[in-house]
Length: 128
Image 1: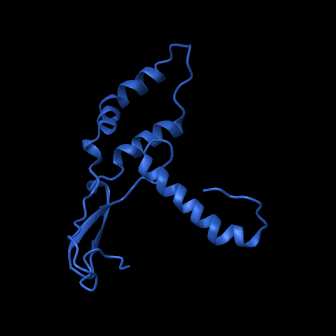
Image 2: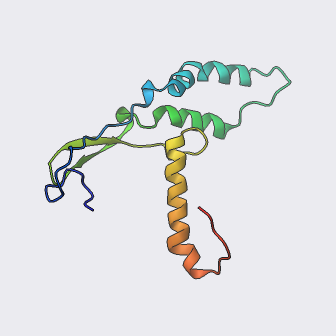
């Protein structure tokens, strides 16, 4: 099968148009954007009862707010078959907050294990 659904050598199909993610439209994004600073202020306020938020958690939330936003960086791509140009926003590649980036990271790790680790060491069982 061709990599491009718009390949003219493939049987006639409905053309596929790239639909970019729109993270700012999601409920989770809007909640984090609206309440992150307040939550951090309360957490760092020092009521004495709770530990402040670890730096890596604050960092992950801030990265999440930049993930998938074209203004924060993008790559331009062009379909070789139909010539359509589109922009792909960079992702945060973080862990913990954004499910899309978690999945991407999990897939990359699994591919690394299959391609570079498992062929060289004995493995009894591996379930993906």
